[in-house]
Length: 407
Image (cartoon, rainbow, N blue to C red; front, side, top):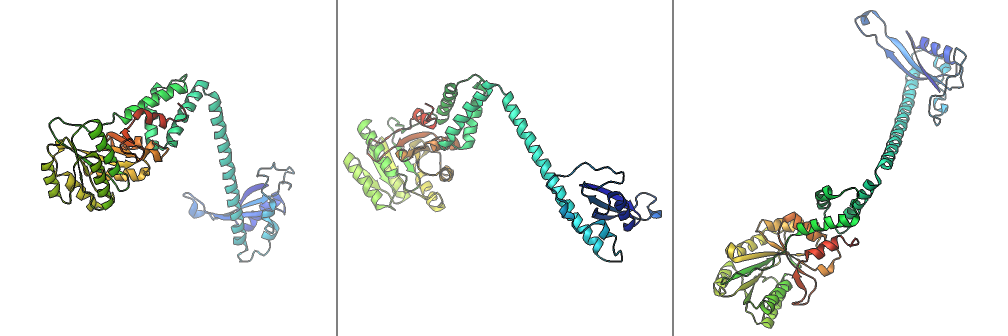
């Protein structure tokens, strides 16, 4: 396909120029008026420019064939019935010229779009080739290092560790990862970093000659009442402490009956409180005990009024006399855990207990919540058996599970 432009004073003259050079099979692709520019524009008439094209089998005026310069899939049939021969017929005022121009303009746009697509594909191929060459040029040790890091990265993601925390962990050990490092060494660095992030879990602390009130807060259905019973058993039977129990969970009669049953078995006092005033009164009565465990009603983190009730109950005891534990289920979705911890952080500082570890294969949320809140970890439960299925969160075991498959 040969495409050329011709200028003349009139459209007819321009078409004749094209016909003389390209032959009668040439077609008009575009017609436009060229206005003169510069200081002489007032003394010159506008000229007409046409864009004409002919199949490259046509003969130029010099008798030579033009080399093919269009993509092979562009067919000359696009230009059927728009030849210069027909363009010269009936030059009386009509819309034929503008119709040809519109058709040719549409075709020109298609050609331009095709050219842009071809250029884009060529650029993509060049980039792919460049990337492949860069990979070939990389040091084998460097490739091995990157592969090892990627394995650890993917494993943490599979265990549902938040990607931003995974990135943070890898970034913090990156300066220790040399080109010749082994996968075992990388795992060791990540393992130690996870242990540091999890911190040292803290459990209930007893003050000599001073009563400590331990409040348990959290959403419904996470197992607070059973957890309290397990802790009460440990404090009474194993640590030989003087223990009492209170509950404000009057919304669930079953919860009160359950806690009372445990209290009777352990031989410790248990009392139901309905108001802040009753809590203050109970506090005065139980000051000679070592530990008083206080069960609060399960509250929805979406209900502001319920959270205010918990806050007022906590305010009945001074800071140095109490510890607060937020009980969370390891089976709760991370997005919900974020919302829960954010809402309870408005109430107070707390330590975290994770329940139902036996009901999930992923422990990523333990690390997520620890890094998100910076709250100290505490107990973990892994079943319904009282008092056996509870203990301090094992950070070493948690780190091993997070890196499971590489141990």
